[in-house]
Image 1 (tube, one colour):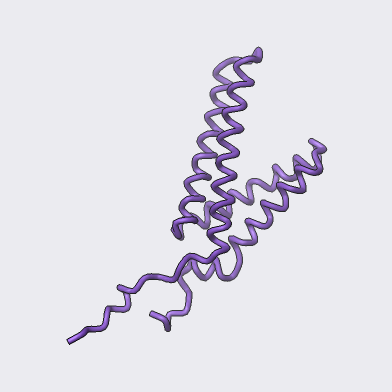
Image 2: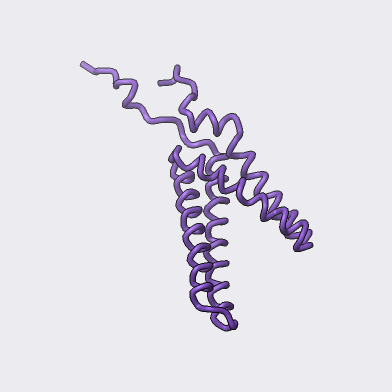
Length: 142
């Protein structure tokens, strides 16, 4: 006597590849933020600036970077909750792109960072990513 497994017992479909790619990029962006914070700390300790300002700025980048790494890992592991924070991260990086292109006049870096940010954003808002995040995939396979 074999019994059919309950519909809720079946595993959900795999995470779409675009979500996994976006997760890797968001985690990498977080690591860049952490490294940037450490560089600020090292450079700030040698400058004539109050230590509390250096520690505050370093702490900010390390905490934000760690949150991005956690979000990226969440996407890589197929956690739906991580999609929305990742979208916000990409939107918050748009002013960085503007700053590189405009006031900083670092055109090459601005273009590179802009392409990465926009491509990651588009991966996160793609139809397949949205359907996965909302758990609206084909229910007939369950």
